[in-house]
Amino acid sequence: MVMQETFLFNMTVADNLRFGRKDATREDLEAAARMAAAHDFIAELPQGYDTLIGDRGVRLSGGQRQRVAIARALLVRPAILVLDEATSSVDTRTDRAIQRALEQLMQERTTIVIAHRLSTIRRVDQIIVVDAGRIVARGTHEELLETSDDYRAIYELQFRLQEESLAIEAGAEVRV
Image (cartoon, rainbow, N blue to C red; front, side, top):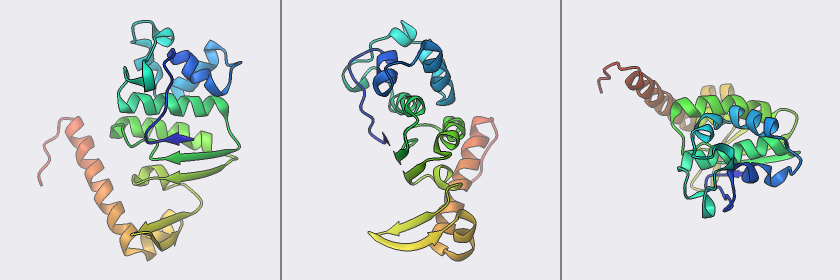
């Protein structure tokens, strides 16, 4: 499981990554961390992978904690994977990098994804749109764009905001 509020132990980054797979080599850790867009920030920590991260990972930002949790899931390669807002604390650019890793992780396994970010779910087999605890639509991304006003409105809002965010990062002026 990769949750919005990840749980990390008061151990090193390496020990947290190895939590589900004790036999993982340093090369395995680094490969998983690269896929989860975590290697660069880990390498910059005072002792790199051997840095103690504090109780519940307090020495890391929310996005860094999520990327460590994603890397841990990449190492374990579970038969069933649950992603609950797994990229909610990362910026748009990091989210895109992580999505590539998650796509690989989700292949050939049952995955349940709970997300508000459509970038996390748009390639899944079945999307269920819930509003006020009720299922209001069900289908693929393409089907929902055609048939669900609720889904289409969320899609248009999120991707307009994402485009504006990317433009700002690139230094362009955005007019509202």
